[in-house]
Structure formats: C-alpha cells, structure tokens
Length: 142
Length: 114
Image 1 (cartoon, rainbow over the protein chains, first blue to last red):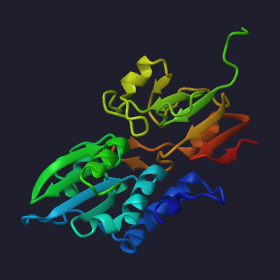
Image 2 (cartoon, chains in turn red, green; image 1 turned 90 degrees about the vertical axis):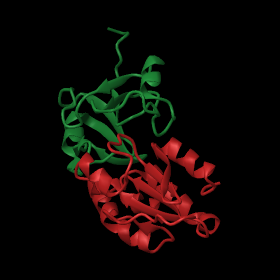
Image 3 (cartoon, rainbow over the protein chains, first blue to last red; image 1 turned 60 degrees about the horizontal axis):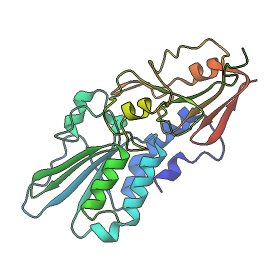
Image 4 (cartoon, each protein chain N blue to C red; image 1 turned 120 degrees about the vertical axis):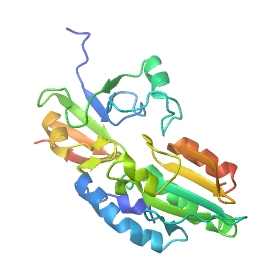
C-alpha cells in the first residue's frame, strides 16, 4: 500500500510522482495499523510502554516497502508496540528533526529510527540496513 | 583514444548498486556511515574502486549533451530544498543527456531525449 504510491506504470514525471506520493502518504498511514507522528507529538513515558518512531523518505521505494513490511506484520507487534511514522520531507531544515525525534539531530541517511521502552530511548539508527536490523532485533519484523 | 570510455552513465545519488555507472553524491554525505543499500560505508566503496563523484545536486559538472544514460534510484527529484540541501533537478538531468540519451528512475524509463 505504501510502495504503490511510487509505482509509475504511466511513466509520469518522477518529480510529480513524488509530490503526489508525499501528499497521499498521510491518508495511507490512516488506512494502516501505523500511526502518523506529527511534530511535537508527546511520546509515551509510562512504564511498559513500547514506542517506535520511524521517519522515511516518501520518495524512496525501498523505504515505502519497509512500511509495507511493517503493516503486513502488524499482528506480530501491535499487542506490544505502537509504531508512529512520518515523512522526513516534512523537515524544512535539520532543526526540525527535534520535533519528531529526540536523539537524531542531523541524519544524512534515511530511514531513521528511534525506539522507546518505558519512556527511555533504547535504540536509534539511520539507513535502511541498520533500521531493518534493529526492527528485527526487537521482534517487530521477522 | 581507443582506451577511453565511450559510454557515460551516471547514477545520481548512487551507492554503487549499478556496476557500470559513475555514482554522484552530494558533498555533505557522510563517508563513514553505512550506506542504505549495501550497509558498507561510502569510504569502503570508494576504496574498493567504485567510482564516485561528489558535487552539488544542482551543479553537475558535465557539459550539455554529454551523458548517455542517467539513473536515479530512491532520490528526490524536483522537490525543492530538503533538510540536507537541494533535490535533483529534472531539467539539469535532461540538459546532460545526449540526443537519444535515457533517464531511468527507479528502474523505469521516464525520459528519452529527442
């Protein structure tokens, strides 16, 4: 469902395709088991809370595919974890990062990941390979 | 002259995933961070002999009509300024292509220059 936003069977201009994907991304989140991370949304700090923040680039098919994998695996994680996602294209500058994540000040690779357990950050990663490995390590992805 | 490369292929934002391309990365890229696709740092890839060109996305140092094929995979096109700097410009991509040159975006042929 996420990666489909970037399918280009009609070979339209890539810039327009990416703009369309960016605009439709929030609606696809709402139709999924993920939630949208909005700027300055509070982070759960209660004990036994498990919260994942993932920032993806809406122009990157591999990162959209990661969200599809997460969505397809929702039965695995939804009892324990809350997964909130956002589009890094919402950042106008690196200063905006702190509105979405607390400990990744200036990522040069996407996706980005911040994991919280019991109100504490337990892991941060950037880049597709490392983010996937972390999600697998915490049992969110198989 | 026979030893010179006769086909010029650029992978803008490339990380070495296409073996026959010169890979362009913007100057702010972190050479020590594992790349998204291979998991290896760019420095490791450059040391392995994979060709990289570091330059601004909007100032690609090639003359007009010099490039046979341009590849872009999972990189922003015509999205204005991102938090890291300007996105790639489709007009600049088209400027670089030779007549008959091609642009593949995420594996799809999206432009062939008349």
